[in-house]
Amino acid sequence: MSFVSKNELDYWLEHVRIYANNGTVADYIPALANQSPEISAAAFYSVDGECPSAGQSNYKFTIQSVSKVFILALALIQHGEEAVFNRVGKEPSSDPFYSIRKLELESPGKPLNPMINAGALAVTNMIRGRHSEEMVGEILDFMRRLCQDDSVTYDRDVAESEFQTAFLNRSLAYFMKQNGIITGSVEELLDVYTKQCAIEMNVKQLARIGAVFANDGRDPDTNVPLIPATVARICKTFMVTCGMYDNSGTFAINVGIPAKSGVSGAILGVIKNEGGLAVFGPSLDKKGNSVVGIELLEKLTQEKKWSIY
Image 1 (cartoon, rainbow, N blue to C red):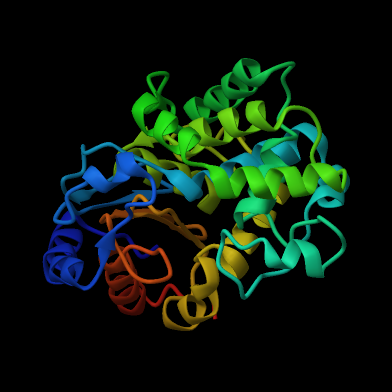
Image 2 (cartoon, rainbow, N blue to C red; image 1 turned 90 degrees about the vertical axis):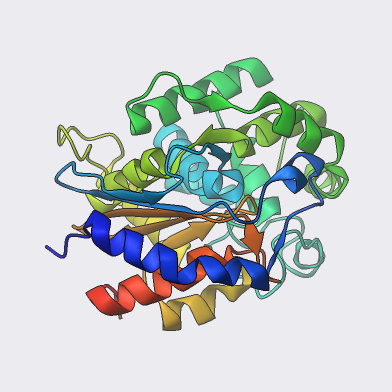
């Protein structure tokens, strides 16, 4: 096992923090624009239950699009592969994550994959619940089990900010509703989706969830199954092919591990049979990925020879 020590995390985080100057903090969600670009943190949660961390590792951030991996897992657990992939495809997209273009070009209204916004909306629409409050409850219960922390919740200010400015996501949802991909109230779906994206945690908690996936769905501390191994495998595959927005191919070559990013500046990496690696730095590159996170993942995975290729 290629364990990561605190000294190694401290060393690499210190060396990559300067890259924050090469990006900008997301401002299209007003509540995210307030983040300081200088914040940085990293944690590695091993499948043996150890968790060294570096930087501002107790700082809480919203996970944003990283949530798409977990909601996909929950939908697969609740409904199975056939039902989920009737609603959303399995292929990567070369377009930005917010694009509506492919919905018109492909099989009418069916998103290419669950990691773009349209696909994530379609998957979130499947979460069990008679109304948005019950659906959010299902999501939070699942996240709390993965974190082993009943305090995990969502940032109400960020959720409200996203809900009030989610004009493009509403357009995607209405287009899919017209084509029968999603059902029910679009406003209720956006309420659930924005709260899902606004779930907040620190790098140690996020890395722990990564360790669950690294451990084929089993809790890294108790070895109790939390996610079926098949579901964990599907999610990790999507992280490889689609997890880093339309920079996924370059990331696969340069880093080569399953990973998912969010526009808050979070990146979750999974190293099979080793652990989960979480990095946070809110300064983003033009693709929407944390510049500090990308640099740290590149350097650490090369040193540890973690690439699956």
